[in-house]
Image 1 (cartoon, rainbow, N blue to C red):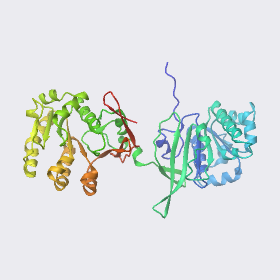
Image 2: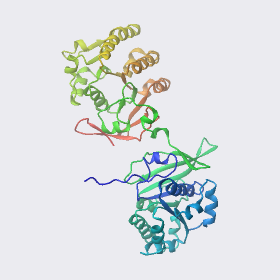
Image 3: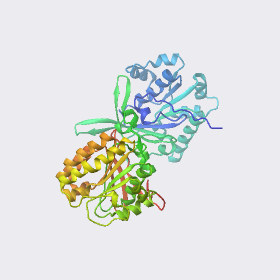
Image 4: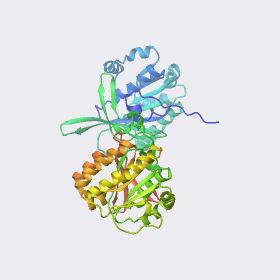
Length: 479
């Protein structure tokens, strides 16, 4: 029998539930931290009010410093009538000392137990646990209190926010409470554009729950906290980007890209001579071929067709069979040998002028692909753009690439382009980046290779991944 998995507890904060992929896991204990004035109390009451009004979940707010009358007045500006919620048994506001609260929570039939049962409480806010640090003999006593508090809240299956005051914005010390809690949400105010200060929310931890990392801007409005999630957190479907995705053959990269590379998109791969990119990009090309895509490959000067044949075979594709089936072609800028049987699949353009090259692409390759696509067959193009730059120049690329990318999108052809931004120069690389739908960068720093998606439809920017070389296919793993 499958175990029942409870749905997350909605916070009621616009945008925050999106960042939390639905909300806070039920019965979790979450730290809500920030410096004074960041809106911790507002967010906490928004959590309680929304639970009471929208989800029928009563809540308790425990304050150690502010009087209930002050909280009633402050929260009334957001339209939250706390007194009425208390009359309806949907809320309790308790003003206690930390010592009294802990005594009552540890007492089997104490005030806390009585109130929880009386209103069928589901949510709790404690403001603030910072005060537990004072009046105790040592750190060990402090840790014991925090553990006891967390255990009581868990035992009663209460979804809780524990407010923690931050004294230093940029402190590198991780508070002990972070390790004890199931989650940590941080509010901060950071300078932007020298004269402007921006309110930032970041989820640092949420045990047992996927969440979307990064900093997200929020505003304190007349209706409470309004969080504007960073654009990259939206799934492609929410942005109308519903093209079929083609797997890259690398599981973690597929996950980052939301399933793979969208069919009919243009993706740039920025790398350099220090990065070992052969298996990385061979895995991607071979995955396209294994999924039934027909391909046209424009290789680099240092990668022969003999080398590509071995690489694609290692990644589970059969180049010879694909050539025989008219599913794989090569555009060669160099007059060099190629494997036997590849004759009909190689377009040698080494002695062609720019005009002749464009004419060949338009009159020879174009009609061949067009006829194939009429039969429902799908194509991808894989270009080593550094080769085109070295053989035909940067001016040719800026004129050629835009038209090529536009044609690829129009016909639903996926275009994968390998280049070295540093070698082709800032102006050309910026132009190419603007023209593309996505950019994936890989580089070497010291003794490690890294990868990051720096652009994709919807504005996604991924975390930096370490490229680990492994012994089994696809021979690379992102960590």
